[in-house]
Structures are given as structure tokens and as C-alpha cells.
Image 1 (cartoon, rainbow over the protein chains, first blue to last red):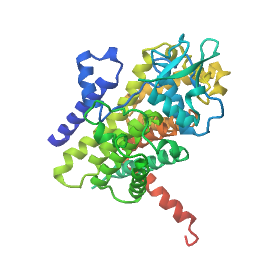
Image 2 (image 1 turned 120 degrees about the horizontal axis):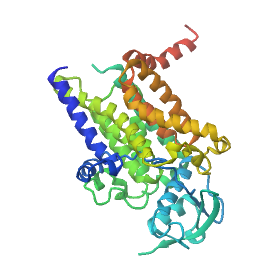
Image 3 (image 1 turned 30 degrees about the vertical axis):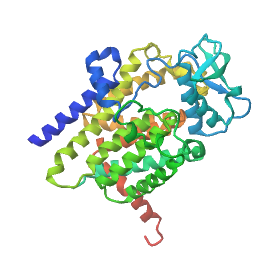
Image 4 (image 1 turned 120 degrees about the vertical axis):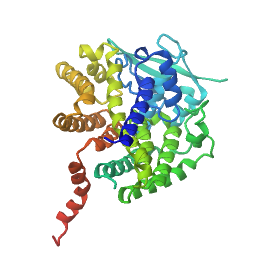
Length: 142
Length: 269
């Protein structure tokens, strides 16, 4: 292996270590290294490998609207992603009577479902019995 | 000279972009008309550079994606050129950031792969050898890092270790795995097999025999999870990254497969 090849390998390893400091579980990476990894990776090399990890979500997440939601693989995925995003917010977690979400999020759900947020609800079914629950969604106006 | 596996990687990456665009087309009226909500890069130096659609007039995503599609089709047939690869990467990242709620880990993986594809497409001159070789190793390590990271995240919980993870996923109607909910033993076997595959992959690729075995297993794993979980872009992105781990002979066979198929079907042959 010549000098140039060794240098290329060292550069690639350095890049991968910085990414590792960003993507590995935070408890496994020293805090200072994580901060450096975040500054390096966040804008240009962002990635996330936590699908169904550390455990799959205990609650399902779905939007309920007065009518039918248009079909579509990517649309359904986007709606599920936004639902999970809302579910993780402090104003929308389990136990809350209503689900408060930012205006931008509500507007996107409105566009994707084709319905106004007036009758929008967040429906979830949690383990162990998966009993369905629903609460109304309110856009959090600034 | 560009190697066969680098050329295969380049072409598969372009095919992936076309696949991702085709999957979004039915919902383009919503997803491409206006950038989604707030910018995911807000507050970073890259916001204006890598998320331009949040600052451009509504409908500009259509224009950018038209150009992206043309570049992607061109990349399936033309020799790699670094500046074309750079424009393709930028347009892809801009689109991904504009429609961020639809993104998967596969989109993020491809954003990284397409960035380093610029380095792989640099001219065949000695002064670019360092950049090309570095890009080659980074793409290879990126794949291993993805498997390592997902394994370590899974080991932080309980469901993957006690074997209940896929039963939990199967009981969630958002994923099309309902059929597995009634088969707990099979779900347990699949859970542990998934964990074992992802944990061992970064080690297995360093020996030719285990590498072939894990790459073949990975094709089955990513195609099936991509289809069954409704995230085909995710599975396909991993398969693109496999290209640089293939032996040159296998890469050449795959590259020549379409031409060989046409020759076989041609009436004059």
C-alpha cells in the first residue's frame, strides 16, 4: 500500500469516526466527541439509524379526519412521520386531552389529508392491549 | 481508469434517484408545490445553500426536479463527470430537505452516497487519485457504520434482545406486517435474524466467502423489508452501497446484463 493510499484510508477513517460520534447512541460517545460530531455531520452528512430502536414504538399513530384520506405510499409515510413527530411533542403526549401542534405541522397535515384542521384528531393504540384512543388536534398559534 | 464497481455504483445511484422520484410523483401536487413547514436546516450555515426551496417561490421544486430527472436519466448511460454528479447531489438534497416528512434513512444514506459520488467521478488523473480513493473508502465505511449504528441503538432496548420487536411492529397497523402478528415464533426468529445480520455484517465483509454470503443475504433482507414495510427507497439505497463491496467480475456481469438480455431477445442473434 503506497503513501497516498494510506493517507486516503486515514482520511476516510477520520470522517467515519466523526460520523460515528454523531450517529451512535449518545450514552456510548463522550459528550465532547458528540458535540464535535454534531457540528461536523449535522448540515451535510445527517443520518439517523434508530428505526424501531431501541424498541419499536409502544403506540401506533394515525390522523383521523372527517372524510377519506387520499391513498399513496409516500403520502401515508409522510402522514405517519408527522404523526410520530406530533406524538413526541410535550403538548401532545399520552395523557393530554388535546394535541397541540405547531401551525406549520398542522398546515402540512391539512394539505396531505385534504381536510381542514378543524376536525382533525390524533388516533393511537398503545401496547399491551392496543385499545384505540383519540384526541382532537389544535394548531398552536403564535 | 474507472473501475466496473465504481461505474455500477454510479449507475445504481442514478437509478435510485429515478425510483425515489417515481414513488413521489402520485403525490407531487402536494409534496412538490410547496416546501414542507419549517426548514430542517434552520439555524445552520447550510440552510440557504442546501434547502433553497424554503426560500424560492412555490412550484420551483417542479423545475428543480425536472432537471434532476434529466441528470438521473443521463447518468444511467453517460460516463461519470464530477460536475454533473455535483449538480445532481445538490438538486437531490434540496428536494429531500423540501419534502423532509417523506424522507427515510434511505434518503439520508443516498444524500451521503451522492456527495461522495462526486469524488468518485473526478477525472482519471494522478492529482485526483487521493480524493477518488478517499471517496471510495468513505462510501464503503458508510455502509458498515449504518449497520453498526442501528445494531447499537437496538441493543439499548429490550425488544430486540427478548425477540418481541417484530411482533410489536406487526401489531402496529401503520406497517403492513399484520400477517406476522399471529406467528410469534416466526416473528421471534426474524427479530433475532435481523439483529444478527446487522451486527455481523461489518465484520463479515472482510473475508471473501462471508462477504458473498452477507451481500446475498442483504439483498434478500433489503428487498423484503423495503417491500413489506412500504419503504422501498430504504432497501434500495443499501443495495446501491453494496456495489463498491462487489468483486470486479460480478460488477462487470451486472453492468453487462442489460446488453446481454437485449442481445438474447434480438431476432438477429
